[in-house]
Amino acid sequence: MLVSLPKGSFVLISTMVTRLIKPLSVCILAIFLAACDGKGASGYSRDGLVLDLPENWEVFEDVELNDQHRSVNLVTSRGSMVGLEILRLQSGELGVDINAYLKRYVSSAVPNDAIREKASFDFGERVRSGVTGKFVHVSTPKPTDTHFMIEVYQLVNNENSTFVVFNTPDSEVESLQNDFDRFLSAVAKQNK
Image (cartoon, rainbow, N blue to C red):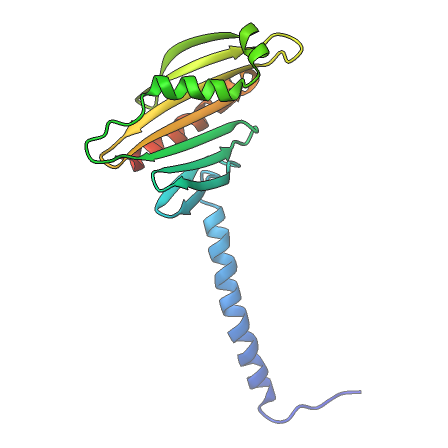
């Protein structure tokens, strides 16, 4: 059984389909182009903070702890933790010392006093993407038997003191070097 449409219906239906498909096609193309930037990277933007993230990195927390302190936490493609602590400076203020920050961070990374007493900590300095930072290699004895690296870099401008922290198991440090370099370089450029 064939249904006949009134004269001019084909043109009306064709126009409606075209009006629906064109915007949908443009949206799909825009999503595709945004996802395919050639580097496999993604971006994050919120409240003036713009981050160029390496492939498969994700921001899982971005909070204003108070009007002077913003904390942004990320996870890498390998599950390692990356943090940004942005401290807004008052006029003429120098900010927090990187050594004090690293000491406080290590205390929170190894919170158990009994494990901390038996752990070994090897401190040093490292240059990554032209930025000098501090690192500590932490090894804890059995039963935890963990080995990880914490790197801290401080970027200071007239408004902020930003700490970039990489917290990585030893087994993943080598595989994340390029991503860490790229991320730190991008944050340093934005922090100028």
